[in-house]
Length: 383
Image (cartoon, rainbow, N blue to C red; front, side, top):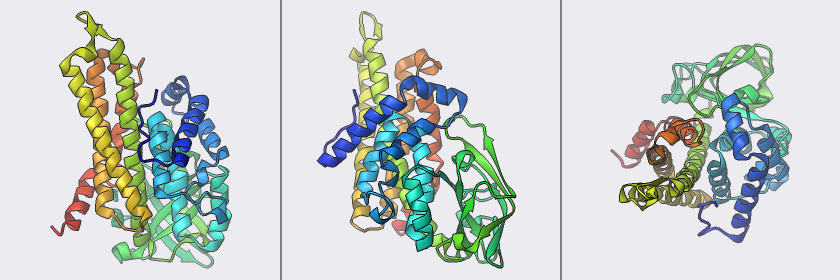
């Protein structure tokens, strides 16, 4: 039984959570999740099922086939996906949030009308290409160049660690249109992932095997000028707004997965008998579970507070950074404690705890490393 709390949720949000959990239990049972992790296969069936149920359009306006949901609605959904399987949350987010919200918030009316309904229907997948070999935490240092050539731009450069690029139809790509202007020379484009001159190569990673990180190479890739998202050289502000939303989602997925780790390890510990009693009766084990639950509830409270602030029209950059740090570090720490509770069993591929451990580690890096986000917090404190 799910340990996710429904306190504070509306009746509609409670129904959303129950519906999504039922859908995922049906199309993505635990045996299938293990197979996806083992074979490195994208969860196509879950992606399609979420689209058919309407969840791809949750945050988009109704005019574009969406549901006009709130940031809190999105948090409920991502927390639920993260609880069932972080891989399905990672499959959902690049298309709907990391890529799609750039189009939704900053794209032209033509781009919105052409692409948002197709995302909502699950007809296309997207990925967000920002990080480069020499531009990770220093996002303004991107070197991928976009040069105007008539009614097109020509892109040359390389991206790294681009999640889900190998299954994407389009890449929302951050470039330099004025290479000498730093952050004031950045522009964002919607790029056809099958365009001539574009090569995508999956990377082998420790975790998140079902969704892959990828290298992306641009060699003279021609992109219609109409596929510029927002204005030329205005990409930095757009990027910061969308990264704020990405960090909310990372926090929500981390909070949800904290509870999955707790539930999974607890089910094992209740059945594991040593010295004549279940190991949950030993204080050393019970206190580990208490610490895990404290971290999960703290992460959840911070995440929902940020969602409420965004719904109120605020710009909670500091609070979002706090929630992302708290939730992702709690997720990794919970996985570590869960493995300790399960002992040798947690370290074997027979049990899911090792997957939770592997998958949780990347979120301390992605979406802005937690070290960089501590810098964000310090700046907001005027330090």
